[in-house]
Image 1: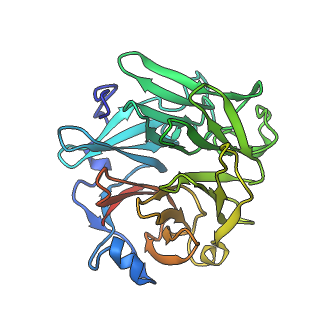
Image 2: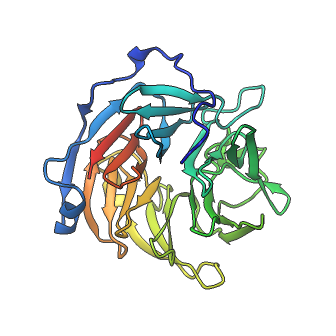
Image 3: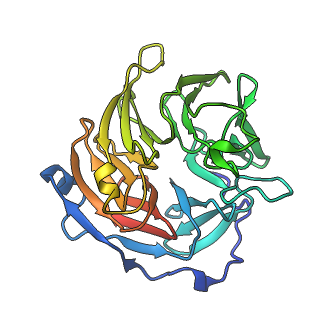
Length: 327
């Protein structure tokens, strides 16, 4: 259970910004019978709230009152909370940048996760770190540098059962992105932080690594690449020593970019091993061999997705919207 439920829980944003009555967005495209086992006939993309700037990083928090969703609005430097009973509230501001001057268009938190102790863990763009929200003690930095050089802007993360954290580090949170003079690393890495406090570079072969996930058996790491010249999802075997073996391309979204806006971005992996990855215009549902089973088409630039604790609901962040699909 996530025990810090009252940290900066505010409701100062006017309720008129948000839609409390679900609307329907887009359509669902079915390409394989396996898709129907996960997304039932009649399922719709419900809009839970709108009026945000750019939503990201949805994570479900289970509690004894029915649970709630936390998600980032990166430009607003904020984390919002949504629940069925209370709608949308501002949970945290600032969420990813604590400086005193302007810091670009995307200063806030991005990917969010709950650690094995039930604490909120965040990829922070502006402060260029992974942080954890401690019980009654504010935030602590998990990691913010590799071999003495500051990270670019951590983007997305996933916890292994051991407590290790896999995360990506593209330059999107830097005010001038890849050409920013504050940049200290000359590559975009995929990293593993271990529970002994050591940071391991797993690969720097991807030009713009973004969403990251682990297969249910933790034998493979799935990484999305948000590069318009090579918009792909990659699958890397995890070796016994926790290094990565040579990766294989699962799916290329180049053709889809001709139809819809957006790029491969955040992802979530179902216990069945099915990948739900945000991409051009929606969520792409792939098996571990890279077969496209179907698409949840929002029609919007779709950033990320995450499951409820019982895996019966998929929450989707799509541009200004927070959506859900019943599974």
